[in-house]
Length: 233
Image 1: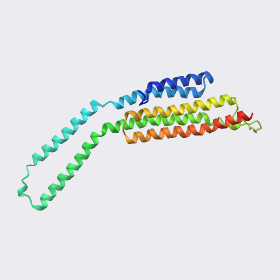
Image 2 (image 1 turned 90 degrees about the vertical axis):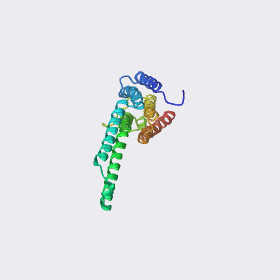
Image 3 (image 1 turned 30 degrees about the vertical axis):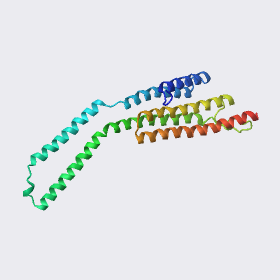
Image 4 (image 1 turned 30 degrees about the horizontal axis):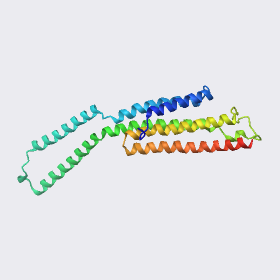
């Protein structure tokens, strides 16, 4: 099936990327971030599968509460034992107004209870997507100091300048790994979009993907500059 993302294949891809980073940059911080990204893939798979399943215990509990509420309403109405014939017009209006308010409030309470499962799953999905949003910013932090301007021959350095420890090729590879990690972060977020048809969650997924795409675009500009510098030198 090629119509949906396979979280297992995403995990395999992240693990392979982690191995590539470890081989090129042993014990680097980027490799540790990639290892955390690998853990998030597995967590996201478990969370998404759990969110896709109905919460039977919660549904049974809510059903009991709703039925008890309706039963209490019916009992209250029958216990009043009103004789509408003996009511004046003003009293009848008051009774109808009070009954309408009660029905509206009880209806709102029942709707709130019935939508509780969806709200709980939404909160959990948003919390998970916040983790992915945070790790995207962490990846971006790792590439901030990889400035193509460091490769200029006539650059004037200061005591606080970032030391140049990478060759141009190594810097290109490092930045390329960052773009791959950002792309995979967006794909992990999309796992939640496959299992939840919640507009708030879908919007949050799109935000994570847009963030990853925007950060990747910025990194690719650096890669293009490095390629141009490499050709000139």
